[in-house]
Length: 110
Length: 131
Image 1 (cartoon, each protein chain N blue to C red):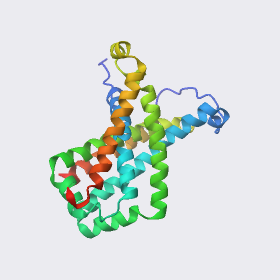
Image 2: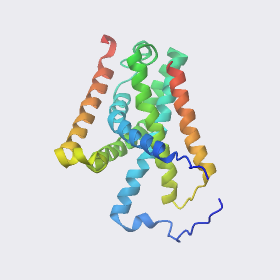
Image 3: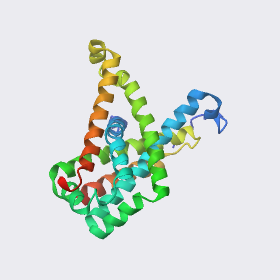
């Protein structure tokens, strides 16, 4: 029998990274969007940062992509706590969704 | 699945029976809110790519009272996540590092980093037309 390949360590490390990115970035982002309107967060400035500068594009990818994986990992495992014992189909659906969100994020800023 | 694991019957509201379980479920609920908020941010990126009108409409939506309530609930849960994340950081850090520096410097160092990064984000956001 060939040695099975395990994906769980990779998913676990993405979950760890997601916990980190949520902690490091989300408070500031949420507070900024609650307190500042479009006159401060103007289209020109936001577009220049998140769509044109490398630092802005990289920042938003680093902030969002691990966060998707971390949250979805926790949603998937949290279902168990809510007595939903999901099978492989739901697992593929969950992580597939994280993959779709990740690709969309990278594509939209590049 | 070929195997049929035994699932011990549990009452559906098991987590309401003990304060620690209630707090666990409260903290874990943050992942749902954070995921939805991240999807909101991704939507914002698409609007930013689509042009000024789409971006301004998205920014107006962020000011909608329902959206503000959602953002504030997400913020509260994010803070719970952040503090519990820092509290458990010494236990997931490399144990040689933990032995060398101790638990509190790891926890406080992480929280300090979080505070600095978030102040930078808010300061950059506040810069208005000067950036």
